[in-house]
Picture 1 (cartoon, rainbow, N blue to C red):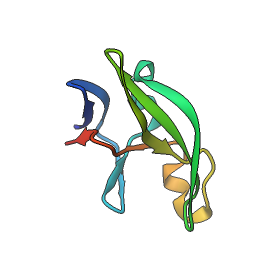
Picture 2 (cartoon, helix red, strand yellow):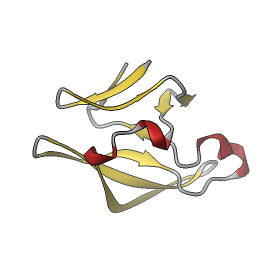
Picture 3 (cartoon, rainbow, N blue to C red):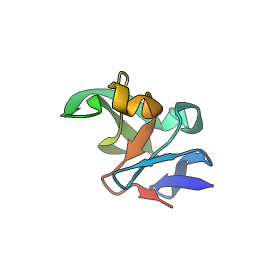
Picture 4 (tube, helix red, strand yellow):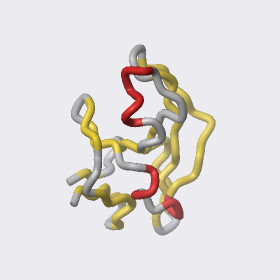
Length: 93
């Protein structure tokens, strides 16, 4: 089971992550939605598409844009549509 942990809380947990470019992408049903808030941030990946971001909030602390996902993807990335990946100090193990 792969877990994403931030601020000593498990914020996502899955045995079905997809690893791309060293990042574990968690199925959308395997994140604990109470810790995630959509932001207006977007970025572009040349082969995956346009990423959207979530702030991660645990115990009143906010990790801005610490999670991203692709709501729409290119044909090459269809296996991760809606899946969530992490950075900015979120530990994935």
